[in-house]
Length: 428
Ligand code: GDP
Ligand code: IMO
Ligand code: MG
Image 1 (cartoon, rainbow, N blue to C red):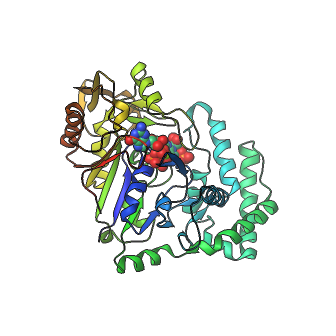
Image 2: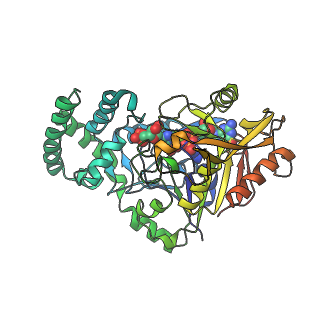
Image 3: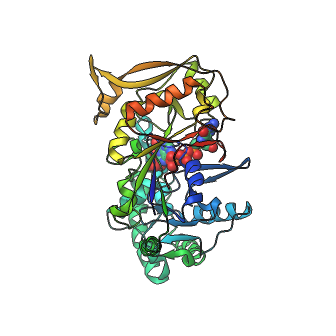
């Protein structure tokens, strides 16, 4: 029996959804443990594209999908997503989608505050997804959040929302100059969401414990990426949750002894949506080419993603922070038809070479990438099904990533489709 965590190693959008969907075939349960609908996970099966923001990417394989206590959930978006997937023929019921009673609920004032704050700070904005993620986590930590379990008591819920709305409206109107929320309307709307979602609400930790005792295998699906982690990422240009593997336990209610492997998803180059320093960023025609060929637009907000070379300072940071036991390299096909491929192996800062990811953003912003250059390949590799069939220059790139990261590559992805994948070693 094994339970595996899947983690993004960069700044999100590494292709986690695709790999989770692929590996879900071997799991009984897929659980998300942090984040909310700031995530956008894409799966392509038989040419059909699916994007999930909240529901774990195991749903297409019809596995038991769990929304862990570490998540922040917008019930409106969740209902919309259930409807969207059902319209696409995916069965979703209380038996295969469960929501932790401890997960925090994203309220309309969270979204309003997120958007108004970003507008107010202008140039210094984080570039959030505007989904209310940060303000919801703030309330959780401030012990005034609303959890799913509280939706089962309408009177208590209404009383709490009225009190909180007073405070939020003061802040929205007086400080942010934004529209206040209507507490009565909000209460009515959320109680109708509750009616729809309560059959899914349960103690996810107990579900996982029972399943693991019965020998079931669990896949923990990370969202965002290691460098968006609230503690370990490029603070303050980060999201508001811990995205690293350690939070798989905390955010779902299992102990560390139940985790047997951590696979890091690595895009063959680097992308970032939103603001913040990015040492290996490309501002030339190669960056444009990668952006276009890789169709690098955010799955949640549609924003153009910034592109750059693979950064080993970041990847080594991820190996350490997550205890990665294997890597999956995605979007390798996108690097085809380039004369040369570069890998950033260290940074130069004030004339000195550094290879540990700096904490200070001021330092990071001044870091210049030190590159190693490898020959590219001209062949389209998206049809290839085995490692042996890959051109030697592709294999050299992969071997170098393994050497520099000291972590074995277990999966190579050469296209968005579930079947456009070379599995060298199945983690289950
Ligand atoms: P996630 O947030 O980590 O799940 O990643 P996203 O879904 O936001 O972004 C990854 C994008 O790359 C999606 O459009 C995927 O369909 C696509 N993708 C995933 N793997 C590959 C690959 O190996 N090659 C290509 N060309 N596209 C891929
Ligand atoms: P997936 O799971 C890429 C980024 C936002 C912004 C910062 C804070 O699809 O990889 P937030 O709304 O979370 O407060 O925004 O984090 N961000 C992501 N970038 N992929 C994601 O998720 C992201 N989720 C948040 O762009 O820079
Ligand atoms: Mg994404």
